Amino acid sequence: MRNSLFFFGHVVSALESSFPDLDDESYNTFIDSICFKILDTPGRASDPEQVERVIESATRLKKGKNPRSGLEVIAGLKLMKSGDFEHAIPYLTRYRSQDLLVHTSLAFCYYALSLSEVARSRIIPRAPGEMELRAREQMAEVARIHRDADSKIPFKNSPWLVRTFWLMISCAIEWFPSERAFIKIGLEKAKRDGNREMKDQILKVAQNRFFQDREFLQEAFDSAIEEGDGGRAAGVVKQMIQQYPESAEPFYFGMLLSLRTTTRSGYHTFRKQAIEKRMPPYIASLLDIAFSALSGRGTESYVRIRDMKKKYPSMDYYLTPVNYLAHEISSEDEKQVKKAKKALIDSIDAYCRETLKAR
Image 1 (cartoon, rainbow, N blue to C red):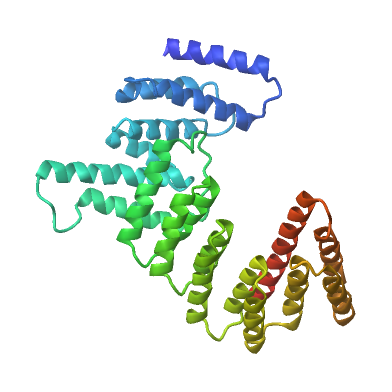
Image 2 (image 1 turned 180 degrees about the vertical axis):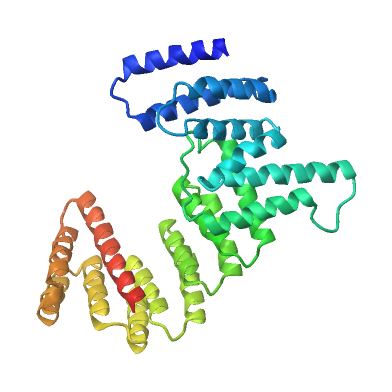
């Protein structure tokens, strides 16, 4: 205990002298990180009593209410990492509802114990054992209470912790095939982390298992556009039309794809179908402006903007910046043109989607 206190005291002294204006949250996060580094030393986390001594030492130096919380999460995750799942469980259980990664790590502890049970018995069970049922119970709870894929853990991007998360999400998708929450959580996590591989895998599951889900179809379309895969985007549009043939929304996405590729015949085909499905005329007019500007017909786009301002005076507030972007697209500066094109498409897309959703 004395050695731990002396070490933490030295660290705090150096921290306060180097960063005298450090806020309490950053200060506590730093102490948590130091605690993890100590416990991550080989052999440290194998002794639960020593873990408690380190926590007690660090607790004395933290600020604010409930100073043990972050430290106990650290201890639980380090015990899990070292394979001491039984001692990790009590620490992680207390804070499972506060952080998604803590909760999936708790589920992993039970799952790992279930694998040990199977290995010891040498018989493949016909039904899940007690530990696996507890792992499933925790993942079912994850779907109920977690709506945000963000985490407050200082080392949330550590490969071992990320792998644990994806393993349990994959298990949950298999255990609960009709629960869309795991797809949604996985997509948000993949996008936050810039994990293209996992995003693509999750979207494939979503398109096969939840093929009527508008949100997942739109995610698949956006992902294809982001990756420059026009063929895959066209496939998603086709799937949208099959699922919602009487809605204008799928044809909007067809227009949007044609807008990005400036394919005139495709654009007008989808436009005609969208109008037949009662797309609001001013949405079609906005897309016409964008198509003219992106196709290099600047004069035509300015005329369309002028006519639209007369027809829809209440939209003048929005058409003014659209007019500015249309002029920027005609610039001789290639970088400026590229930025203006992206800004115009993103802006009109956001406006149109919000309008179509409201309807």
